[in-house]
Length: 297
Figure 1 (cartoon, rainbow, N blue to C red):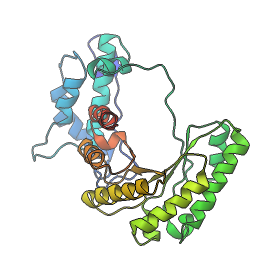
Figure 2 (figure 1 turned 135 degrees about the horizontal axis):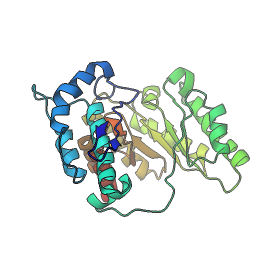
Figure 3 (figure 1 turned 90 degrees about the horizontal axis):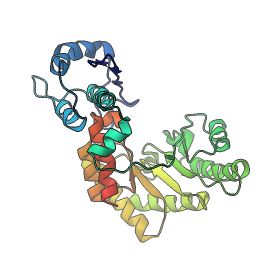
Figure 4 (figure 1 turned 90 degrees about the vertical axis):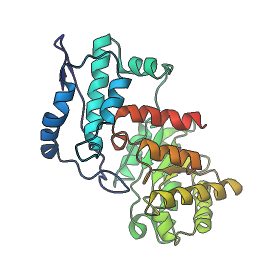
């Protein structure tokens, strides 16, 4: 919380993602451990600073280094920059969206942002709920186990995709065409011995089961490192393109920071990148991350 001289208070939320420490992410963030860091190392740098805008201050605090040369935890950088954006908005008497649009040369658009709903393990009951509410994108599905959720030959996911299509038609109506987006946590790779051609065969079946709905598969494989992940997803996307399989591949694991996102986009490693805002640290990086794939088409 930043107290401004006019008495208003700007807020930031030092949050981290659920899978902290996995897939190349920062370790678990414990608030009690980091409050002294905020009070002793960050507070003196914030005190009496003039808020004339967001971008310059955000980049300054996002790039701060500790005495050992390491960057601050992503959750700290996330919270500080949120508070700075809120402060810039309050100081200029504009909305946060207007501040961002002005400083990053973007246009404000008067249209609804598509929402992606997540069912968790209640992937049938909660899918019905999201379909009834006509969600734009669903269900995530939490397919994180081969035997129990994907099926050893992928048969359980195929059945689930077919069920989703039928439910969308029955409960949503003929004009309801949600995008199916399913996170499989690398299980397709596990089920098919990491063979990209067998994986592509399976994804062709997934496309057929989902048709006429568009389907995205997040994290089809997890190769254990960023270079290996980029190479595998880029090759898989190339195979799908050659075969005219219109399943969209979503990059998530090992694609965490702004630099990671740029590398995945440059390599064509996926049709979409999952931008998890806390993983990027300062939200100035989130803004740049959104602009990166848009610039690359």
